[in-house]
Image (cartoon, rainbow, N blue to C red):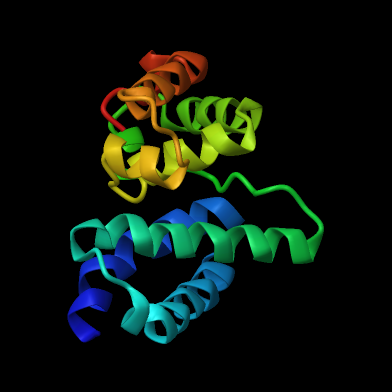
Length: 155
C-alpha cells in the first residue's frame, strides 16, 4: 500500500487541488482517496489499470465533496512552471482560468486528469467508460482548442 501511495499521491493531490480550488481540501480529499483505496484493494483485480482505478476513486471523492458543498468544481489559479515561462504570466493565468471555467464538467475533469494527473488517453477513456477508440485524444484536443492552444503551450 505504501508503494501505491508513493506512486499516486502527488498526481491525485494535484488533480483534486485543481478540482476543488483549495490546497486544504485537496489534502483532506487525497487522504480520503487512499482510505477508500485501502478498503477496496482486496477486491481489485486488474493491477495493470491501477492508475485509472485510483483516479476513478479520486474523481468520485472530488465530485462528492463538491456536491456536498453545493457548488461546481472550482478553477484554482494556475501557478505551474509551464505557465510561468510564458511572456506575461498574469494575463496567461487569467486567460487559462477563464478558459477552464468555460469547459463542461466532463471536459474539465478529463483535461485535469491528463494535465495535472498525468493519465494517458486510454486511462481517461476508461474512466469515462467510453468504448470509442481515440475518444480521449479527441476530447483532449477539443479542450486544447477550446482553451486556446497558444495559452497552454506544453502545459
